[in-house]
Structure formats: C-alpha cells, structure tokens
Length: 293
Length: 293
Image 1 (tube, rainbow over the protein chains, first blue to last red):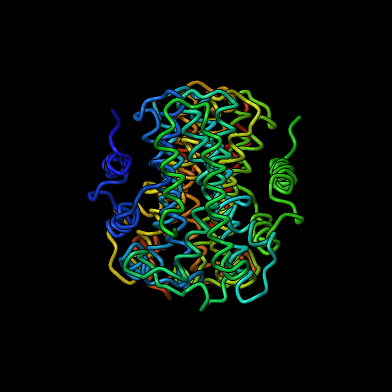
Image 2 (image 1 turned 30 degrees about the horizontal axis):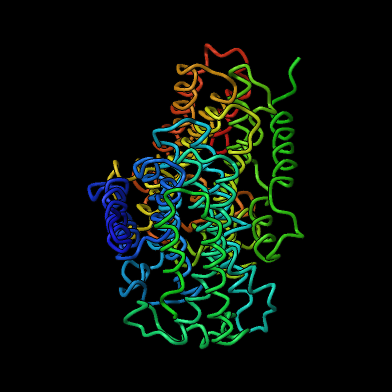
C-alpha cells in the first residue's frame, strides 16, 4: 500500500531539507554573514518541487531515493541561487519571497549577490562528491551547467528583463519560460533518471516530462500572479502586470492559459506509462495545475 | 632553443583568446545583450595569467598545451565572472577595468549580474566537454568549484567587503588574499597538472606553487594600487585606501610587502626543481613580482 502522495511529498521535502542543512556550510564557517545568507535562502520554507522531481525520477527508473538525494540538493541550490539574483534591485526588485524578506533585504545587496554565487559553486561541488561513477557524476554536472547558463535559467531571466515593458511575441514568451522555469525542472528529472540507472529512452522521456510540467508550473504561476493572494503564493500579487512583464495570461488570457497548463500536465502524464513506480510523478504533474483549477 | 618567455606567454595568451572566442556563445545566440556582455568581459585585453599557468603546469607534467586549453579557458571564465560581480555598485563599485568601462557601466547592472552568472555556468559546461576521461573531467570540476565558492573566490570577496573600513588582523588579510586571489590560481595550476598526467606529488607541488605566486600577485597588486599609475594597471590608483580596504601595504608597509612578495616568488621557484619543462613557470613566478621591483 502506498502513502498518499502529499505525505510522500512532505516526507521527501523533509529528507531534502535535512540533507541541505548538512551540505550547506556550517555556521562556524567564515564569513558568517555569507553562510547565514546561503542558509537563509536555501533552507527557506518551500515545497522543494525540483529536488522531489529528481528523487521521484530516480525511483521511477528503479533507483533508491538515497541515490538522488545529493543531486536533488544541488538542484535546489541552483534554484535558490537564481531566486536570490532575480530578486535583486537591479533585476526584479522583489522584497518578498516565500513569505519572508528577500536575501538582499535581509543581508544587503553585496552579500546577497555573493551568497547566490556561492550556492551556485556549491551545487557543482556537491555533484563531484556523489557516491557514484565518474561518468554519472560528470553527466550530472553537464546537465546542471547546461540548464543554468546561456541556454537556460540565466538566459531566460535575461530575456525576461530585457523584454519588460515591450510587446512580447508568443515565441519569445515560450523561450523565456522554457529557459527560466523549464530547463532546471527538466534537468532535475533527467538527472534523477541518470542516477536511477534509466536507459537513454527513459532519460529522454523524463526530460520531456520535466519540460512539460515546467511550462505548466510557469503558466500556473502567471495565473496565480493575477488570481492568487499574497499569503498563499508568498509573493506580491499583480507584480507582473505592474512591471509590464510578459506573461501567458497577458498574451492568451486567463481561460486559455489554464487550458494550456492542464493539457501540458496530461501530456506529461502520458509519458509515464512505461515506468513502474510512476505514481508520484503523475501526482506532481496534476499538482502543477491543481492550484489554478 | 626556447622562445623567450614573453613571446611564449603572448603566444599562449593568443591561443587562449582564440579558444575563448570559440567557446563563448556566438553573437547569433539570444539574448544578444547577454552574449555581448559575456564576450566583452571575457575577451577584454588581459595577460591571461591564470589560463597560461594552467597550460604551463600541464606542459611541466609532460602534457601538451592542447590538453589544457579548454580547462584554461574555463579558469578565465571564472576569473571574468568574479571581476564582473566584484565591480558591481553594491560590491566594489568600480567603473574602470582593464582600461575599459566595467561590464555594468557598459551593459547595465542587470545584464552584468547575469553575464557573470552565465560565464560561471559555462566554465563548468566546458569542463564536462573536454576530450579526456570522466575521472579527469570530474576532478577538474571539483577543483574549479571548490576554489570558487564558500572556501574560495566568492568567500574571499565577501570577507573583503565585510571588512571594509574596519581594522583587519594579519590572519584575516591572509584569508582574504588566499581565497580571493590564491585559490583560483592554485586550482589552475593543479588542473594543469591533472590534465598533464602528473602524479599526486606533482599535483600537490604545482598547487603549492600556485598558492605562493597567487599571494605574490596579490601583494604586488596592493603595492601597485599605491605606487602604480592607472594607465599601466587599467584600474583607479589609490582606490583601496579611499575605500578603507585591507591591504598588505596598509598592514606591513611598502618595503616589507615587496620583500614578502619576492620571497614567495623564490619559494615558488624552489618547488619546480624536479619538473623538466619548468622554464615558463619559473619566469611567471618572477613576473608576479617584477612589476614592483
């Protein structure tokens, strides 16, 4: 008999948080301000969707949860790094994140920039120390570095800010979302598949699953930025519109955006049929759009 | 017969620049502003000391120049990333770097932050694609990530800015310099040794050589910040004192600082006796302090 999936997800998120607390530099390390900022941002309350996806993908390929835990933490470190930098005054200028002051509000801009950098470096260091073959470790480094850089996370954020206040075409909006949200989620799933011993077919399917739900999550976020409340999302509502940010809702409207997100989630679930342990991945696909139903 | 070392150094720097130009995203990639900022900062005129050290260390261990060229470029990308972030208004607030406007002055703060991030990500991506065993590649990723993060580059910068305007003890100053300058230089030398097939003894010796000349370079920079001219250094003179930065000169005075740098360079040269092709490394050790003699 299976745990219900919400309990399983909380359990996995708890496992990730415990391991993150171990992998992050301890409070005795110098300089204290930098360490505190890293821990503050990376251990901030959150659903840990990306690391949970990495673990669930590993399990879906027949691996253990433990085999993916360090890579899952590395993914969360990259996520935290990107949030810290995106929130900076020069970029999105957000004061509220996960219901708490953003890193630069709490620690100052200089420490926030460097804490993001240090988390990014640590993510790669953690991958090099995993207990698996050099081939698997270097594959994970490859996936994590590619999804972060000029064709991934950082690039998506750059296109997003460069596009602010300008009319944005559908292909540009898609590019922003694929890179800014989809790339890291897809990499998390593919890393899980690699660590779980999945063959190249399984790796490709879980990567594609990740791309689809990554986009679904982003569209759902756009919807929540219009319809949600700050308490629930931990972010300022209406901030996208205020800044003239390109969003799905702005381009397609609320209803079409919701329909698109749901159809992506269904497509993602369709990719899971040949995996035996696919229940959590299915539930996560549904969860990606549940919030906007 | 050997080339004179200055010619050899220029030749190697040219080789690094050509390869960097290939490894950096091309100008057709999106978003153009981000790509231009990455290329502007990473291809800015410079002596390419760090990549040259990686190549010279590889050659000293019996490897080819070509075996170390991509790792050398990755080291330069990390160096460029750290310069971009250090120059930001929230950190050192420098407008001039290598004789040209700093990245944020030329491209705006948001693009500069993200260009630094993208260069950092690319450095790791480049290491994963090197033409050598997975063991050697992952070892290089380990060295580069460790020297960059919470016990390296970023940490040294953080301790430096946190210490600004406060009295700084000798151990703290040493920690700043070891991390901010020494760590990447030492890692460059050790990566070269690994790529050249050096055994663990050779790796340790070249790492130690790198630590010593890294510190010598930093002390020389402190001296030049007092004695140099902006045209020669490409940086504003006297800027350290203005900002109340901790420096060797501030702590020990000019003469003792010069003597310390020279003695470090001599110690570094002493580590090279058992390497056959050690001429360039010896010359680079002398060069680290030549500027202040």
